Image (cartoon, rainbow, N blue to C red; front, side, top):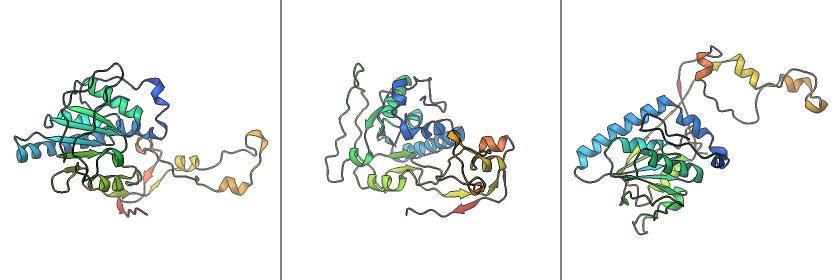
Length: 266
């Protein structure tokens, strides 16, 4: 897991033994290689950093990367040069370990630190002490010396979005965080601050065939299935795909204009 997006020197990969701990987080790697998405996040961070410096100078600024993964967005915030203290908050230990390695690989220890755990647990309640959680040194690695931020953060950047926008729990996560001293509705700049889901109908025989049983009278082991099963398309669960390669290969075509899709938390 390397923090990409032209943020600095190439950093080390996740150790092989840690890969097994990622489980359902493998979609994180697709996100890392989404160059257009990363470019837009970097542009938003630069604009927010410039506005915050103009508005709050000479005060020291702080930022939170909520659900940081291996640290791409937190390090992108660091690259703007606007923030004296940046916290990368990640619940998955192997990804948090990668974030620490990427901080060291980019020489960002003076500004960046990692908090491990769920934001629901790590961020204190509003009536709790505003002191930062203690930094725990890794075995054989000196304790990071980034300054401890004071609440609230000036900026919170997050990538808790899936293809249906809210499937990763972005709304309850941000709502809970806004109930702590660390995020303030009036003072903390959120990236992203709003979003919509855009849908578009498409046609693709190649993808359609992925949702049908393979031809042949028998399955492995000699099991037979009714012909009606073979003619019935569809999977028992949604299939998440990046459609860019199918478009480039001419294996799909859009048959409608983009439209805004409704989103429900229920």
